[in-house]
Image (cartoon, rainbow, N blue to C red; front, side, top):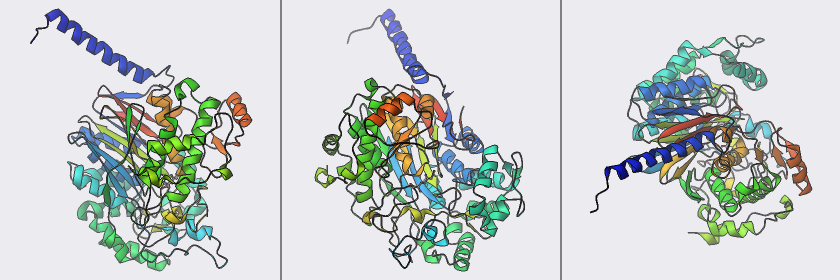
Length: 574
Ligand code: DON
């Protein structure tokens, strides 16, 4: 064996540090950074509410791992972010375990009650009764959040349920300070919440008045529910004291969920859906979310184009992105549903060969018309208000979690005596084939209502890996726009060399096949818009899209960013 001289070893070590710090520098500064990420060395939590982020950090500092912190965040958001954080909804969680070098996907999506029927949202003329579908006691799916969070803790956490739920109990019992954003949102959704006396009592001081920024919001019933869960575990929610109140509330209001629905609720543990994009691995949520499948499909289509040279948000770059989105959402309408009930050709849709075929449909100069695009046949290639949070610990474990009540405050109903807002997730089913949902998405037979089935989702909790290690942990709310928001965060970092903060700030666009409209945020450059119109795109301004909560890990350093689109969000590191 040859011996290295001390001087060679010195230069070798020096070059290692110079090289590594150069990588970190470019990850911080991106091509030409405008917004700096939060930087930390020991752990990081990015959520849509600063109180929940503080809770996550408190748990990490106490010695908990990323899963402990994520579960504590999940329970705390149910208190401080009532429009989306929840006990009465459902979601998806990716857990990456550093030691085992493995990622697990937890499916705790809501389930259609056993009394559900395919045509139960149609009126006597066969038309969709939109209120019944989206805003009634029949809109409520069997909630999965309590089972999902506790399941993650039991399998991968290190602290007790009592320890991770304590901060949420404290926030519910002692109250938390109402922000400007919460004050406004409670005014905006007054009709939805005041229609239910149980909700009205919690979110409004009196029948004609509103809470103001700076007031405390105390939620006694919710504190009671959290205490039951802390003591009895998920049994309290699915069989015990909370279950009794939920079932009574359903009975009194003509809802469908009964004792058996709650008792039978199960979280499923699956493998994440896997793809690659350039030198990176993508891990995301498989069906019944459409998120991971179409994220990977769009990335596959785009991989062959030199987006970097086209330039960020140039007409040429957006045109190619939009055409890829159009093709993917056409496939979504036909092929995606709950794989426990229908055959979903997920592997075909995410295959590179299928992407090659789809790419042939893209003309570099002229926009396709959605009416000319039908869903493909990928089988041959077999081989406003949700919330996302990301957590990373110093052992290399990470959690990427998106959960929801569907609409802001879900159905707007609170089950009496529980303080728990109930979801309206049944609205994510296709009420009849070809019908559009609240997000304008066209639904097919694969996503028809069936007892015991999970409604199709767009939630896309994602982990991007580089050299086998988590590199970017991200996800977003935004209904149908979740997939394209996550896509753009990935493209902004990988193709356009942005740091995680610039990638989160950058102007977003969206296309979902139908309506045949290229939605964009207001600040998109006017020259770009004109060039896109010349290519045949129909442009429309949309309010801010998405709310990403992202962590990037480079050289063991955490770089984080909470989307500036939601004012209460905060990424904290230590
Ligand atoms: O699962 C889904 O795809 C929808 N229920 C998500 C709803 C949503 O993101 C609303 N938020 N802005």
